Image (tube, rainbow, N blue to C red; front, top):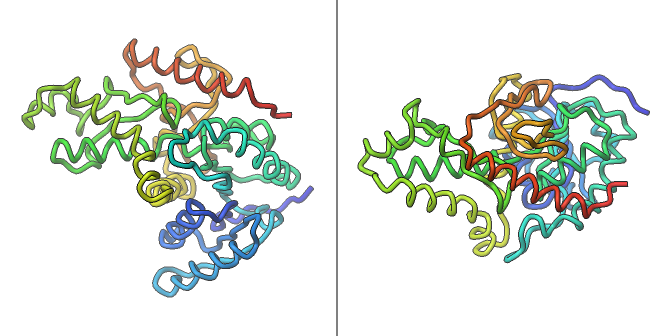
Length: 319
């Protein structure tokens, strides 16, 4: 068992595929960390990515970037896991379950045996299932195991709403909740633009077919990944920016509210499953889930999303 004081300026990336390398590049540009270790089953891949990304450091801030192994994670403030099989065209995130649970069964014991004391951020898909898997196999406290959840889906929703309404997407406040996948729900009942209820703001901007418009936007958001994968075989830039945003909240102890994957303990009648819900994120990880206001239909959809994930979990051997 290794004990080493955390270096709050160090991050580790496990998995150097499209998502891992794009996330590493985003973090290099962010200035959040001064040290980054890349770990991959293919050591040459990790070394190549480390070399390539480090060549951009002279245009940014000083940073040590190198390929390493699991011993190098011990003092990292954040360990990010992007390792896993890629989602193929016509394949759902849940279709990836057994392949990626198998990969996690080799990764998580390596983390557990090193008595890791930092934050574990799961990005691999299906992220809610794999965050649950990481919790069970790593032995880490719940607040220190976070999934990237629907942070990207929520950004896509804000982007589409901002485009629809002709306003800065940063002024749009709305969440995608539940599974990061096909059963996700848009929480329209609590959506607003700078405090103005969404329907009211839509009418201010000349939009009156609320149900039709919101249904179309929600479907577009849900199918965004499928469309991108069909066109370019993978998605990685949007999730890379989402990873950077979550790391910002952690390293700066921002107490920001982000829709990340966390364990449910009776909220909305849901237990023993990891779902994406708004939560306060800071230096200690997931501090508290935020009880966002949902109408009865949305609550029922959230429970259905939880049940869809539980059905998958029932078919997984985590021993």
